[in-house]
Length: 370
Image 1 (cartoon, helix red, strand yellow):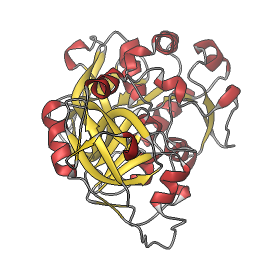
Image 2 (cartoon, helix red, strand yellow):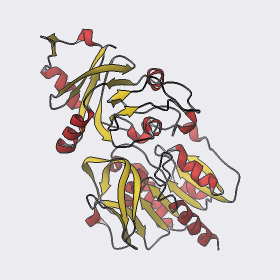
Image 3 (tube, one colour):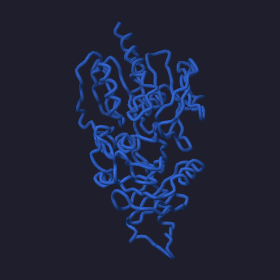
Image 4 (cartoon, helix red, strand yellow):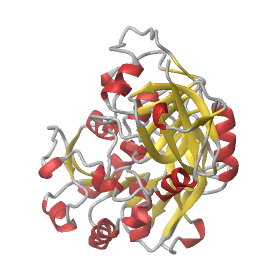
């Protein structure tokens, strides 16, 4: 295997083996603690602009299964693993992960101490990084990589911008529909495919509309409910989308359910504030507490921003909190038929503890039609 290097913005260097495509890539370096679901991670649009580190030591052991993809392609900027399995074993396996990374032009690195990397990110916070596998273009002195200021400045200058617009797959306003009882308008900010699957499973006809759809256009579709999807980037950057969500809230007649970025932008539309977390919540083992009954659920999450608890308006009820750090995980609105969660109740790779929230959304739509 050829060598590759991961260079962090603070100058820390990890030497490992090149996987996936060759070349150089820069992104925001994050870690996810999921033990399964690496395919969902790689194809989740919410990871746009990020170099993703898997903390679980062996990745790729069940290969590539296209039916488990959350979108048509991979959106990560780079991929970091401790060990990449080159002999996957699963009756659904359709290929090796390394071949998938190459086909998707994802530059990666394996064979580094991912525990050390995770500790750095946990203590210092997420930071930009560079993976480079074209080692012939690097300066190697006495067997060690020499980092100059130009490289560090290039790494530090990277910024995730226009994230929601960059992950659009529903081009030219094409609609994806499924004939059934309830009609749901899925506002696509980088929607995971399993959100639509969960709605269809419950007898919903889903109309997928792009991020730049207006509130008037959505109202004209006369849906029974509106789903605000997950997506990447800073929620506050999406000023135009937030304004349209506010119009939907002011209209107040259509039930709204927001997930992840949709949750954050709904809160912003209602007057709350968001802020960036030190290292975010990413993985399938995040505990959230329902403040209404005290029950704790294990959830799947992937976000770097959170709604600030103290910024909620009087008509917004804090419903769920993260039991690790107390941050907002869900909001119930008392003046309009709307609620939202920071975690992913649709998580295909699990856990499925909070899947029941889709049923609550259906009950809300039933009440609207009664």
